[in-house]
Image 1 (spheres, one colour):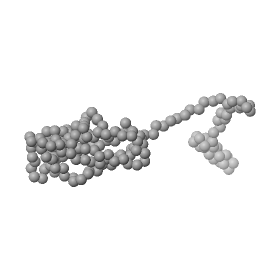
Image 2 (image 1 turned 180 degrees about the vertical axis):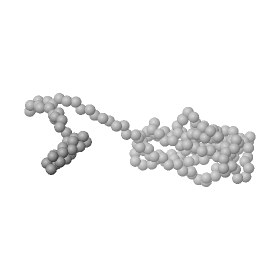
Image 3 (image 1 turned 90 degrees about the horizontal axis):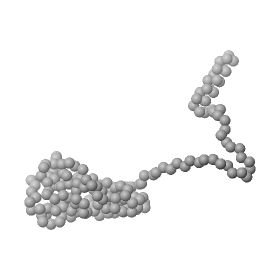
Image 4 (image 1 turned 90 degrees about the vertical axis):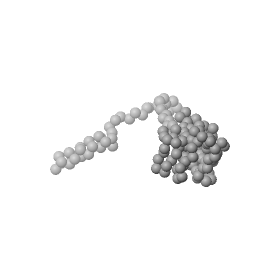
Length: 179
């Protein structure tokens, strides 16, 4: 019986030692006389905290944008930004079918018919492969800051009218990032 309990005790100590619960390593403390400096090394680790940013986008006014030839057609969208550091707002058209131009939408897909001029966001023409910011700003503290952004579409007399039920459409990608 004594041999079994010793074996069990030995196995418990062995398991605790393997998992680091009991250690037999000598102490690494330094002995220093009172009043004398203690020398050593401290390593500081820093972690970069990514900036906190939030964005919301909403349409202002009627959702149908009526376009007229030979005039600067303008529509505003409201983008609310909350950021704890300087920021930039980049708008792009990532769709290879539209390439920055409002394109005929049938309700189920795009056709090859599009407006001659590219859509502009503020003064930046789409598709904006260069990723030019439409707007930049400073930290907004802990509250949202509204940004009215203008969409500008020139329409030519050479742009073709659409069949009933079809519309000109484009998909904007709005990206908020640290400046």
